[in-house]
Amino acid sequence: MAGSAPAPSSSGCDAVTRGPDLEPDEQLLVTAPASFRGAWSATARSTFSLASSRRRLAAFEAWEIGVREAGFAPGEPDIILGLTDTRLVAWHPSFFLHHPTELTASIPLARLYGVGVVRHGLLTGVSFVTEAGAIIEFEAIRGRRLRRLAQAASAAISARHGH
Image (cartoon, rainbow, N blue to C red; front, side, top):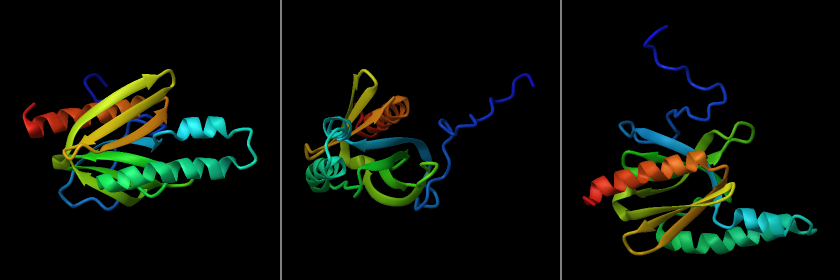
């Protein structure tokens, strides 16, 4: 039909649905799968090691100390990040389809000051800077969705702070 909106993709990559544990009037803007900053390098370094999962978990635990101090600790290495009209959220992903299942962390947009994005080939890194100067970093392989989330977060933060 001419003039009709395109159908959502069958893979669900661009579809944004209502995430669990949001406030009734909270609007979910965008979601993206993400891992802790350093996940890819920890995995790559330990690929041929007998203790690869322990090394990745140790790298995650070191990362988690900093983000916990910043007030945003998702509690696990791989998450679904979401941006709502009021906050940045993290969910535990479902096992098979990687859909958000349980809210594990959130931080109000009012506490965020800036967003940075860096691409390293297939890897995308995103940093959220809090007003207190703490940095919360994530990464994703083939990070188109993470870059889209960062762009939306940057616009929302700029609008809140009048930059």
